[in-house]
Image 1 (cartoon, rainbow, N blue to C red):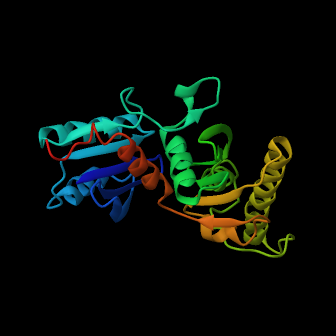
Image 2 (tube, rainbow, N blue to C red):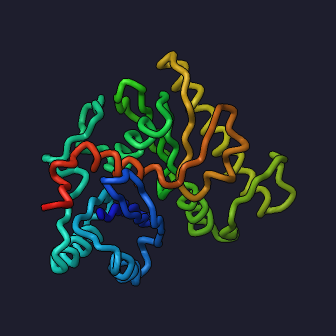
Length: 254
């Protein structure tokens, strides 16, 4: 059994992958910033007969702690960015190492799962858009400030604006401070999302399936003007497909 771990700035997702059955299961998620997250991951892996772990991480200090603990427990650790790990995708950008491993995993997962050109929108600490083409090409992407980051900035850098939780809103004109902030963020990001998708289609002259992942997927889905699906575990699926491509390395029988 292989433990899949996606360490993001906001949340850390885990699951188990069985190469023999090609099934991902036992999904779970923890807040990365919480002090007990590492303990939860360590507890999670107990009684699951884990021999290997495959990790995508954009938080180096958390990755180092987890790797040290896993090695101590005789669990072999592989990271997505390891040079010996083959990625069955062409990364068509100028500086490949600057692209977050979670974003490449999202592209691999989406292409394998949906078999279509995909725009993957990940609502995390940042809001990212990644373009994955059916010929197994990662074409590049867009990074915008995350929604929670925007909300916290409004609250922390002003004297009177409160920190709110956004919700679906039809009316663009707010009738009080909270609804005005909600409109600015929810409708503002809806326009940003639709506008960026429109420009991607115009630039590439291709049709896409829009894949939403991350905490705000459900809220924004109904406001997107294009064919859209939600898959909150697409990163883990991408990790599983990468393991499958590298099954000689992840040999559970040695």
